[in-house]
Amino acid sequence: MATSLLLPSALLLIGLALLVWSSDVFIDGAASTAKHLDISPLVIGVVVLGFGTSMPEVVVSTLASLDGSPGLAIGNAVGSNIANIALVLGVTAIIAPIVVKSSILKRELPVLLIISLGAYALVLDGSLDFHDGIILVITLVATMFWMIRANKTMSITDPLASETQSEIEDIAEMSLKKAISLLLGGLIILMISAKMMVSGAVDIAQFFEVPDVVIGLTIIAIGTSLPELAAAIAAARKNEADLMIGNIVGSNLFNIMAVLAVPALIAPSVLNSDILYIDMPIMLLLTAAMLMMALPRKGRADINRLEGALLVGTFISFLVLLYFRNIAT
Image (spheres, one colour):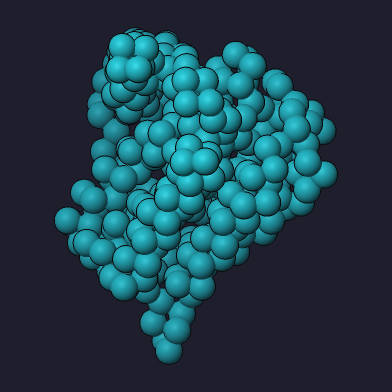
């Protein structure tokens, strides 16, 4: 048993480490290239940085779909959203209570819930097909235009505006040649590492005789959420925890519209009944819970340590549920 799992586990872990590293390299190269091309800071902030944080999920889902494992891709999208809210947001709130100050976040949170509900409505027929993918892509483009427009009217004193501007200013100054080299090199390593992860994950799923969607919901989802978790812990230590909710909302929006669209366009498939009737509803409930926690109560909008602990407890319960549902039986 140990020997047969050694290579898949090594591929998965090495691929994960390379994925996290190469995604940062890719984002740095893409953002710097965009600056050299005089692309609007708003577009860099919303599209380049926003989409860049979801590149690991997009690449993993693409390769999984091309390899004939759309379940892994779907599990990655749903599992990443669950991990972002229950694990990343929960851990951040435990370290430092999150005060929601940004006005645009109060608009984006309901939009996230609406889009999540819409995506669920698309798959209630039990399948994720090409037409569903087209609808998700159109929604993605429309949402990006809306976010850019909303950012234009955002007050410079808004914390999210300050964060976006700070991120753009922090983009390392480098030559266009170096920026393009990082962009292409990061993308190539991203694809290689994602291929390693997918290969290892599929072999592990086959060994334990569990659906590949389970690996996508757990190992792959947690792995691709590690950059957000690391950033959340760093932000909490700097007393900037309130800004992390913006990253989580943005990441989850892209996961729903971009990552979920990939298997729909490349490998339309019938959804596993568990992900349709258990996992996606859990994702929706967590999204609604995040909205309720972040909205003002008695004049104050915050996510406190108790709520953070409840979120982390929910994530642990979700993993236990998956275990008994698929492995312990």
